[in-house]
Length: 171
Image (cartoon, rainbow, N blue to C red; front, side, top):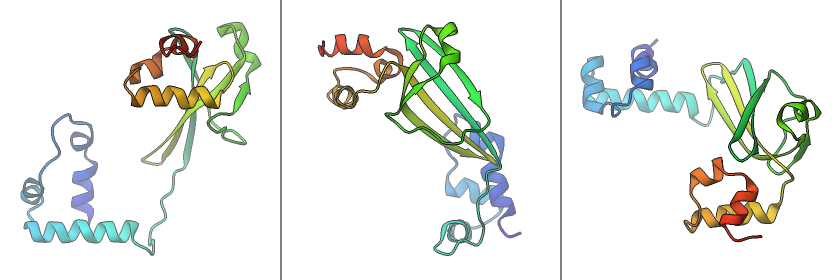
């Protein structure tokens, strides 16, 4: 396969997990024994083959993991994992999860955010649930306050909605 050495370099553990800066085209060319022109052309052709208008290869993700990240009171976090759901909830939807009430003190949650990750043959869906009920106005005001630097990203992810309302003078 003409892309084997390039893909192997790009998928190597050191390349993906390192805190070092990404290698330059020149250093990649030296590692692969290619001139910069040939390396550019190889990368371009690989990209076109994978993501061009006519996909020759379908991407397939065989494993599904769904993580529910719970935020239920100030500083109270938890999570649980599912291997399958009939429907993925959307941001703003309210959920009642009775089996959590004994453990966390509430069974009312809303979907605050959803993040999808595709890696290797895994699809991972992280669903953040906050305790309480979704309020579209508060959701807007929270993100508006972040954009105006009245609250930090840490505040959004770590503070309970009631504490954020106090900090934003919304009560």
